[in-house]
Every structure is written in C-alpha cells, then in structure tokens.
Image (cartoon, rainbow, N blue to C red; front, side):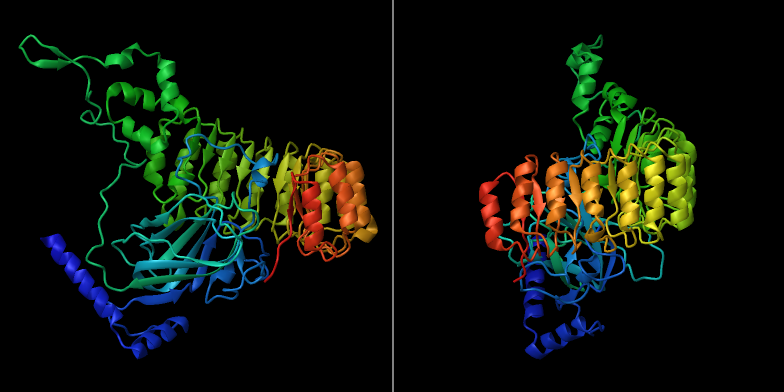
Length: 613
C-alpha cells in the first residue's frame, strides 16, 4: 500500500511540474542558460548546460588554446546539429585499437572486471544541484564512445572540504559503434539516485570507433526535490570490507557427519581438500578483486587461498577508483608482499587517498614493484614522488599522465629511479631541468612520452640528451612540443637509431625544406609509427623517402598537409605492406575520390579522411 501511495504521489508531482505555464518554462530556461539562479518551485524540472570542465584524462588539443579541447564542453552547443570534424568540440587523444598495438602500449593487467570498459573520462560541474531525471550528450562526430555516466554527491563549487563523497552510476553500457558518423543527441535511460548532484562524470571507450569521437555539450535535467521513488541500494561488499573475524570465516556449506551426541558435525572442506593447491590458485586467479575479497570471508581454507601473495603480484585498482581509500590500501597491504605491478590510475580524487595512506603502502610494498600506473592521480605531491623514489628501487615503468597538479620541482625525484624503461609524463608540468636530470641518470629508458609538456623550454636540448644518453630508445612522443627544430630532430634520429615510434604531431617549427624528414626516414629503418600531424610542409619527396627506407611502417598520420599527392601515397602503400593506418584528413590534394580509389586497391589499410558538414 505504501508503494502504491508513493507512486501516486510521484505521478502527481510529475503532472504538476509539466502543467506550468509556457511563460514560467521560458523564464526558467533563460535563467539556466544565462547562468543565473532562478527562483523555481522545487518540483519544476531544471535544464542546465555544464558550467565548468573540472577534470579530464586527455584531449587532442593544446593546453594553450581551445581547439579540440575538453573545455569546449562547457556551455551551450557550438556545433550541434551539424556533423563533422570541428575544432570547437571536445576530442580525446586516441581512438580505435591502433594505440594498443604499439610497442609503447603497457601490458594489460589481470583481473580487470569484464564490465569495466573506460579508457578516458571528463568531469563536469553544473550550477544547480538536482536529482537527475535525464542526461543528454551532444555527439557531433563518430558517436558511441560513452560507456558510463556517474553522479557525485559533492558540490564542486562549495567552499567546504569534501566529506563522505559518493559516486553513483546513472547509466553504463558497452563500447558501441554507431552506424554512421553523423551527429546525434545521446540520452540513455538513467537510474534515480537519492542525493542531488551538480557533478557528472562521463567515461568513454573509443576502441571500436573508426575516428576521433567529438562531443559538443552536455545537458543535465533534474528536479530540486527528491522523487518519492528514489530507491536506496543495498550496501555491497567492496574491496575495503576485508574483515578476518572468526564468525565470517567459519566453514559454511561443508559436508556433515553424525557426531557422538547424534547431532550433525561438519567435516573439513569436502572436495576442496582433494584438489591440488595450485589448481585452486589457478581457479581463483580468474576472479575479480571484489569477488576474491568476498570469497575470503566464506571459510578458512578459501581465506588462506584468497590471501596468498601469489594472487596479488598484479593489482589494478583503477576500476574501483570511486571507492578506493586509505583503508582499502591498508587492508590489502598484508596480501601484497610479492606485488610487482600496481595500477592506481584515477584514484584518490577529493581526499579519498592521502599522503599518509599512499606512503605507508609504498614503503611496505614498493621494494619488488616494477610497474606503477598513476595516471590522473591528483592526490600526488612532491613527498609522494620522493617516497616512490626511495621505496621502489626496481621500478621500470612509471605513468604520471595528466597529473597536472604536481609541482615542477617534484619531478626531480624521478631521476633516482635509475632502472626506468618506460616513463609517461603527458600533460604534466615538468620543466627542462628535471627532464635533463632524468635522462642523465636513467639511460635505460626505452619509451618516453613528453606529449603536451608545455613547460619544457628547448626541445632541441632534450633531443640532444636523448641522442647521447638513451640510444636504445624505442618510442618517443613529442605531441604538441612547440620548439623542436630540424637541428634537434636530425640529432635525435642520428643517435636513437632503434626508434620504432615517433610522434611529432602539431610540432610547427619543423620544416620539410631543411631535409629533416628525409633524414629521419633514412636513419630509422625500424620505424613502425610516425605521426606528422598538422605539419603543412610535408611533401611528396618525404613520402617517397619513407616508402624507400621504412618498409615496416604500420601507422602514418600526415593530416593537414597541402603538398602530398595521391601518386606518392600509392607508392608508399605499395612499398609498406604492413601499413594498417593512414590519415590524410584535410590533405587538399587528396580528395574523397582519391581515397576511395586507394582503399579499393589496398583494402587492408584504414585510410582516414575526415569531413566537415
């Protein structure tokens, strides 16, 4: 009866909210769009665009402009309902499976839940906290990347420090690929939550898409009064609930035998006692981390297996970023005595992890660590990097991608990790002094990402140091470095002849007339991936040199050049049988008809040609 009355009351509220006058609705909408606070009845549905972009994992654009950046998602649509490739939209850094196939891609972590598909994210703040009734995303090019929408209980514009921050999933799905790249308005059916929110998080996976997905705006609709049918979820056991009490570990469900008093008594562990220890360990290795923690609470035998350090040589906590805390790390610490690879990417936002909790874990379990993923960990500060440098002497891989709140001075501690082989510093504030120190003391580096590191003053000096100290370099990402010249590039390719991947996208100071690209082709015969995105000077002679000297080439991006013809591209395709990706978007001499002809001749190559409607 109570449920029926609640439903009737909710229907009445909905009807009342929709029965307002047209003038009231127009006034409310204008107030929201103008960023003003409207005085509304609590049951009226509010429509609001994002007020501010608060955080994101990556973007195609520059840190110093608005083109193709995440900041374009704030406010009303710039492009919609038009379709195509527009600079006024928000674009993530990668798409498709090309990046996963490169030598620089890290190894996947075991135990990643099947339902976790997210590769990138963006967090948006809105003016008014509301109980969400709908979320609408304007996708203007290659839609289908959004896999999860979450809401947060914390008001990002509040002056009070966050306490008891909760995240709830409003909607989740698997990666999809739309039938056409045309614009659409994506509005999935969302779940009701029991708290108001003005902070949304969109998580995306672009691995199935044929090109970069572009987002234009986001609308949050909601009411200011909690709907009567907002259901409370039952609490779930998560990775923090690792109690070892005797009651929880008692043998349940085991076989029985009659006791001396006629009562049933439990035996040991049934058929589990007959299975080899190694076989049980193999079975448990297929469980996700929360399932492993739940299973540890069923009986003493399985508790022993679930706490075996061999189950924790690799630990990816990224899928649980919303729930991970200092207490979680503390509970896991005793099980991680053999930990070698740790993924904490995206964790610790808004005070969930602290210096104390992180440092305690690293000091206790960092000795055997060889891989540490810390992408978008905004709790990190200089003492954290100092702890890493002291506690992880064997570290070979370190990812600090988009840790853009780290002070430049903090990066000097990385130079103490002399065994580093892979270092990702994308979108960080590292400065020239720190990177030169790292290259001096870490000569084993094979994979280096300095994309969008705008505080490095002279990339020619960095290139010279790489050529001198890091001759085994395999991949180098210099995406959007603004001051690398032909002199630095020639010195780089002369000293680092083992390079297989080189990203020089949006490096405007490189000029083909100096012959630097032809020298690059001659001196890097192992080259598999080359991005020369938006370099207007690339010409036919450069392409022909690549065709003659780089037969292993797989990925080539020459977006935006005006001097390359379809004839030279045909030579390239004939000479490079392993080529699978060729981006000729905005190449004025290569029209759609030429792309179609090349595609018919070389069907195994994905030839990209974006459009603007």
